[in-house]
Length: 320
Image 1: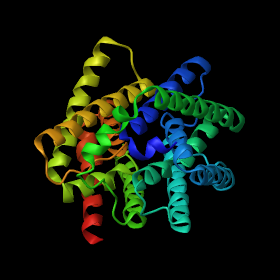
Image 2 (image 1 turned 120 degrees about the vertical axis):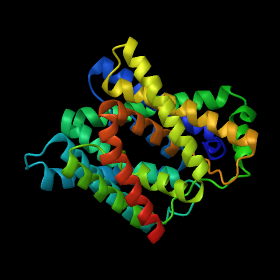
Image 3 (image 1 turned 60 degrees about the vertical axis):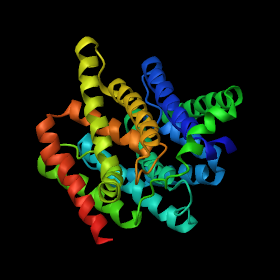
């Protein structure tokens, strides 16, 4: 679907639709289709590059095989299984990025976000079984893709591409030296959990946020404000509803979408210098940080998790 090449809005809508359809599927059938963000990313990857979609599927099979042979025999907590699967997945993704030279194209952000997909699917397969996850993931991905095709056909192209045209004056957010900074981020996440038993703020978002602090501090401050707004909005929602778990994360994704979209238009309105737009990584950053601040004690999460993670990512950025 060529329209994805020129529509940040459609990429974001496709991503959110995948998450919403996933949570509806989970409520109906009790199975998370590979992970909340998986179908949206898979659908977007399929539209942009069929080769990348096939590589993702092959990487998933390899990740699951490695897990079954070397990890499943050990009695590990669910958090350690998550860290290990994410590490295997990301390293496999970095290898395929290097082999196929996908790094360096206009959608490096999408390529890096997709690094976690094999790990998320493997985690779901561990929990629900291979056959159920294969069926549910492919089905929800197909539904998400079909919804994307319908939207692209009914919404005028001008409306879908206007944001891209306006943001063309800015350089897209592109991660420097991912083959170095992302493994450091993974190691940091593992050490934080080992030492403090808490989540460190995501597995791949740390390097992106550290990069923004380095090259666009005002944008980094705006994203921090978006996290604060999203956090208090979620606390208010939780006060009057029973929203928990995956539903809370999907709501955090919606808050991330709203706040980052507002930030895009604000940057355009005030002609913000050194602004670096991104289709989804900033949304994921807001959602992950919001979810983890809601899940864990705020002070402990910041002091022992988020801040050390960002600090080490920033030091790694200085080094490269």
